[in-house]
Length: 148
Image 1 (spheres, one colour):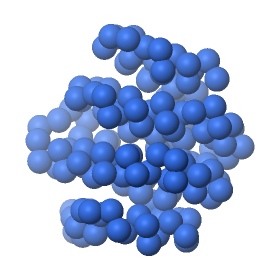
Image 2 (tube, rainbow, N blue to C red):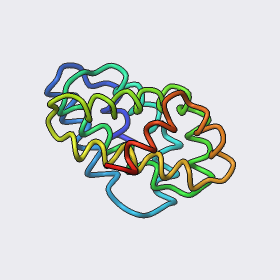
Image 3 (spheres, one colour):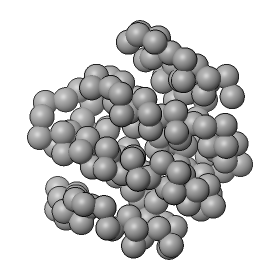
């Protein structure tokens, strides 16, 4: 809970990066119930907001990693997360994926991996497949990733 508050309150590059890295340490596990609790306390929305407000390569890399960790949750939590933050998060991730593929960006390969894992977690929930595929650029991204 305090890690999520730190994400919300962090101001300035160094503090934001420290808060994001703290979140990565806290969220790096495979316990679906803990991820559900982290989601319940607002981790996905805090990370989505932080991602929408940065252009820094290191912050993007770490936020994508933390977001991937949160969506390691069970299907019910992933479903809620998609409906709560997906409308903003999916287009943002698609744009970041294009940026990682096209520009010289630090940790681009790791960011690509984390973004595609988030999409994988969404796609594992059968009822999310159609809404996910309707996002502009999603099918093009799948083709690019499949042949890369």
